[in-house]
Length: 312
Image (cartoon, rainbow, N blue to C red; front, side, top):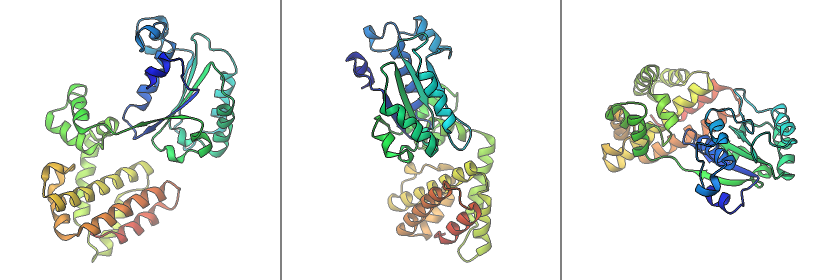
């Protein structure tokens, strides 16, 4: 689609690349930016990789490709104003200036309103690419002014192939991580460390010891998930994945469809004592807790409330 828009001279002024984290949104945004300024893209519908603009892109030094991101909780209005200041000038080197805003959903209200003015008054020499794993968090006013590209999760086979060929993993290790990744290469790579292996072992042991008849075990499970938002998200995703596996195993009896193949004992135990409705309710409760925690509520209370509502 992007190649066709370039060939037809109908490139939009703003795009939204939305989808799961770690599946290639930013990679494609950079490839698109490179192609837009490539001196030979009209011949090949792709970047040649050899011309001066392409070489600058590949070295990360192209002056007309700006990448905006933040490690803070929010992208602030000052970040957007800096973009707007640069967009008032002509591109320094290429035909177009491409601004890539990573985690665009992090924009606070003031930043989003400031960006909206740029989207309402586009210029022919500037292109905005917003990248987000949570595009539904963006204001509708911004969504309506962008061309949307939806990125689907990668297949487990493709992730496994990448891990074997690029990360030099064994087939068994790559298969497990690919199944756990949910279609995200970045997540698969994050899971590939000794600390995560230890965490998974401790978490599954804690979950196996948790029962509704022992309130302290429920509090201990909630406490184990921690206080750091990233650690909590990781733990909740694992909890949800285990309940999903238990449901699939209960309904199909197929081990091949279980993602957490290293936790078969726990999964079989849950499938044996819980009903399908129980596990569906557990998955929904974990989802609601993940959404609630994004609102910066009290983490301990949220996790404890969830734990006491789970069917275990």
